[in-house]
Amino acid sequence: MFEDPRARRAWRLFRLRADLMLSSVSASVRRELLEDLTAHVRDVLENDKTAATEYERLDAALQRIGDPKEFLAPLLAEAVFRNPPRDAGWAAAWRSLGLFAARGSRFLVIVTSILLFGGVGFAMVVTSLGSL
Image 1 (cartoon, rainbow, N blue to C red):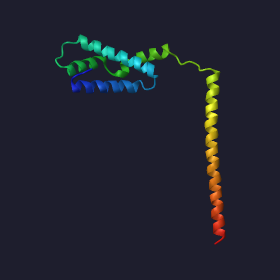
Image 2: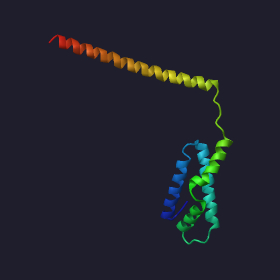
Image 3: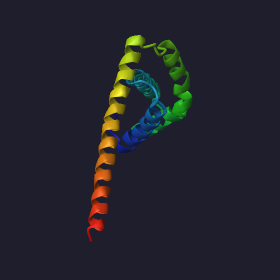
Image 4: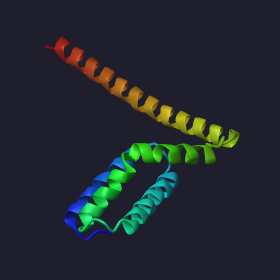
């Protein structure tokens, strides 16, 4: 997107800050908001012909946009309220409970085997000490 290494570095830093802010939303919402942010920065860069270098134009554009948190907060709220989380229903709830039960039973088998082997080992130590 940028030829100047300083401009690329500044853009990556700005995108990283925006990515961190959007880390709690779904991938589709994050991608949509980052595309909107990128399009907005491109529009600002195209309309600003006062700066001489690419880095200066990008820096002016990013200064005009401000902190990604301030720019993305209203867009994030709109995206979250536009696509509210849906109830998965009874089938998904039962499937989740079944998966939790399977995982719990697997851990129960592991713990039981550890305790059994520990008990056998303790009995062997006691028997060997008794035979001395």
